[in-house]
Amino acid sequence: MGTIVFVVFVLLAVLGPLIAPYQANQQLYDQARQSPSWEHWFGTDHLGRDVLSRIIVGSRDIFLISGAGTAIAVILGTILGLVSGYFGGWLDEILMRIFDSLMAIPALLFALLMLGTIGPSRGGVLAVLVIVYPPLVARVVRSVVLSEKNKSYLQAARTQGESTPYILFKLILPAVYPTLAVEAALRFSYSIFLTASLGFLGVGVQPPNPDWGLMVNEARRTYTQVPWALYFPSAAIALVVIGVNLMSDGLKKALRYE
Image (cartoon, rainbow, N blue to C red; front, side, top):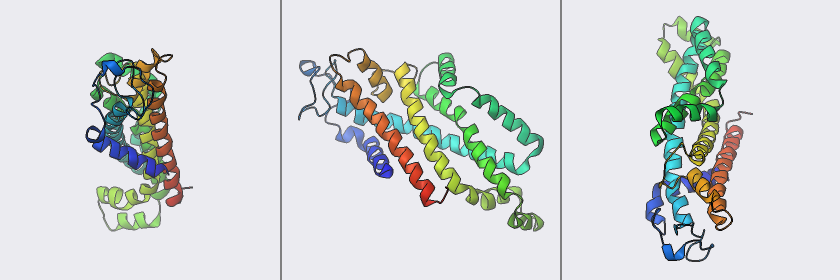
């Protein structure tokens, strides 16, 4: 079920502008504040913009930023976790202390501090994701590497003179895949939530982009008049996050991770 929800939203992100009934920022002044109807399934907001169209088009930004940030974070975290766990010693100690320092700061607080410095933008949100999540991925990968590196097949590979990159990426990395798949799914759900939160706080994607978090923030001011403009983007955020978490649970069972 989680995968179905995920795939549906991915298709919306890919095909959004083609299937949206209206343009995301098209203002129909004579139809402002209309409740859900056959013409506007999710109603219109206080400016006459179709809420359904804005949710569909806004899914692209959410998935592009969160997906790209998660992908880069997982790649960096995997490489650092492999190196740290395999070599150990002072290198492992330095990397772990750096990661502890980064993880000691809540992700949202770190994002606010960083975006307050460099300014709100898509690139800024992406940079936050790339800095915040690699330490978490690296720690998970490192724990798997520590349990694998003293096994007989790796000792045999070292005896045969196999290179370190070969051992790390050809022998150890496949053992990390099941854990990494689950961790990547979890990081993606957290990335979506963080991206939407930053949009809600006004330091993420800026108007007039139909960012879901920004839509919730804008609708908050006119909640008593157009409550549907608040409910539907909030439901979209919740549905995607729940869907990705359900998909993560399914991966755990399919890969016998638990």
